[in-house]
Amino acid sequence: MAILKILQYPDERLHKTAKKVEQVTDDTRRLIRDMAETMYAAPGVGLAATQVDVHLRLFVADISETHDQLRVFINPEILASDGDEESEEGCLSVPGVYEKVCRAEKVTVRALDENGRPFTLDADGFLAVCIQHEIDHLRGKVFVEYLSQLKQTRIRAKLKKRMREIL
Ligand code: GNR
Ligand code: NI
Image (cartoon, rainbow, N blue to C red; front, top):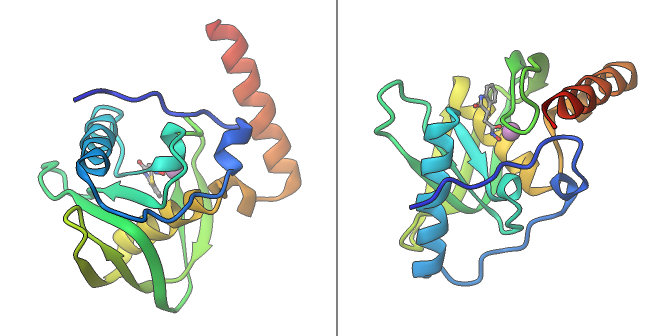
């Protein structure tokens, strides 16, 4: 197992579009294990492959407090969505920034699990938010892109300044 490096906004690699996973193999499962370990260590409730600079359509999520309900989504597709709800979001690629974003309240998602078997899940609440946030990453979209240009400029400046202070 390994902890992977998480790309930090503004990094242009966060805007790459992930490609479909053609076959779920042992390599895919190794990546999933490493992503799960990285997510738990961060700690975070989700992690998209894009965030660890792997541009494949897959993400992991675990919204349990006990860290024992890992969910794996390979080639996820939202089949249906319903309602609107605003909630505060954060992102491991945008540390220290929490802002309200409006998303669908409920989603039906279809994906493959780590064995390559298809499943369909109806999600609402925080899990629905998380799934939409992760699928956005796979399209190269970071949650701050829903905010005003002014807020985005401020966030970029703040993160660049923090990056300089760390170096
Ligand atoms: O850890 C995370 N918390 C979170 C909180 C509100 C809405 C979405 C998220 S996902 C985030 C982890 C992450 O960056 N996933 O891409
Ligand atoms: Ni994120």
